Image 1 (spheres, rainbow, N blue to C red):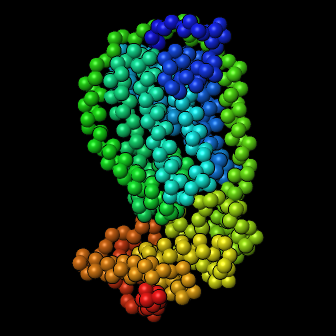
Image 2 (image 1 turned 90 degrees about the vertical axis):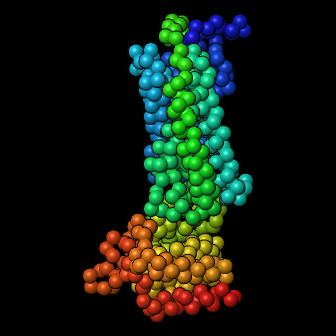
Length: 469
């Protein structure tokens, strides 16, 4: 089914019998003869699997504690298998003459996808150690864009070379496929009940490690995916029309018998093993920082706040990842007020230590979301008790919080005492007998403005005092 090709005159006997390292490199740049050799090699799946593993290590070595989450290394395998299978099925739907060969092409397409894995090594660059966090997030998203476009161009080239599809037809087909996959990935990984609706697929693919939905990285990702989503939806309808009106090629050519048995050369095996070995070599130092992050997270999640503070006091900032933030709010499951309050109760005694300012910064972000505490007697009392001891509240922060409170009250007056669901996850603890406060129903909907309790009065007065500082 490959287009018949003459081997280059400069090809050695070894290159005629083996898939060489040069073929693997030239494949990434779209060389036609190298594409044929890679696709017809009986070892392309195994070599590709080694390269995918190296790319998975590059993406995760400074992002996750792999001793706790080793399954993360399998995600690129699963994602590429799903994508390659979907593209093969789409190709069969678009080109009826291809359907008898579809099953034969499933492993071959997977091998082609896997052999593009070296492009993802760029995600292993420690951008966070080179520039500030927001710039690092932009650099990672730029790398993601470049790699994605490169892979699209490479798949188009492979279809043109191997199946003799016209370049315009292949481009329309692959772009349509890419748009559909991207829209689906963004849609199904977006948490609409979380702040900013950040698609986890974007942070994961770019290798962005922050878990806070209000971190500088998350804001950059939210803006990026918002623009990307708009472009994808704009391009969807034209891509459908261009794809299904594209010219189908003639019936496929037969596979060259000699191409189907080419084995990988020792150089390919060695280079693939070295790629894995390189990332494994730098893994221990980075994983020590990840293990520190995991230990603190586990202590806080289990309610052992004093032990967490003790551990933080015995370490320094260099023992944690550059993008580490206190684990009291995550992009996946939102805020955990009980963890934040538990740690903040211990912070007055830790003022001046390297981690205290980080917790105060997160506490200020919590205050900027009054829906999380203003409509709960318990939460508002906790905030009122802590607020006077927090020194990290700037006048502009206090002004913003007061403005949000005013806007919420005005909104409730306009809609007649009911507003949208709060964050999707109950954060209220009521002291009433029926366990439901009078201004929040059982589903978490706000139904009335809460009374001016002593705690709410303290919060408002303290914030008004901070605006004048």
